[in-house]
Image: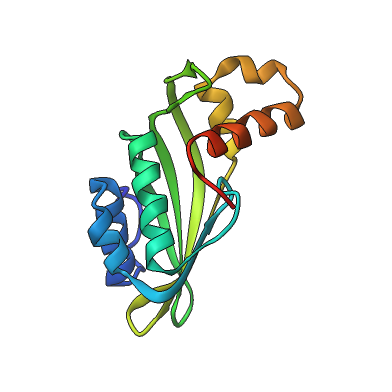
Amino acid sequence: MNENATDLSHPTVRQWITAFNAHDVEALVALYAAEAELFDSGMPGPRRGKSQIENWFRWRFRSTPTITYTEQTTSRRERDTFEVTWMASGIGPRVLGLGGKPFQSPGKSVFVLKEEQIWRQQGSYDHLAVIRQIVPILNVLPRAVAEWIYSLYLRRNGVKH
């Protein structure tokens, strides 16, 4: 956790951050309820249930093995809802043979807990800004073209809606 961040989180959220940064898929998946939903702005659609969530994290860590989240702030929105702002960083994947460059992007994750497990998690960040850091040539292309290239990358790597 950032030394300036106040710990207003829940142990499950703390465990999630630790497991994510360790790329420990089994520990991550164990934190989710059986019927959990995971969605972030870089996904083509939500992942539902432990199997889909596990597949997503396996792909994420295989494609971006250096990704880490540095927590910036944590707040409790409601009794069982927590928001974490973070800075993601790492070396990005190669996209269509290009890239493999460092990236850094702010974002946030909202965790909704039910009986001490993650019932719903939604992450948001500017995935296009990230992909443009990884593949700088995308900076000169229209947004729609860069988005299409990103979706092609996901499909070529087996990530479906």
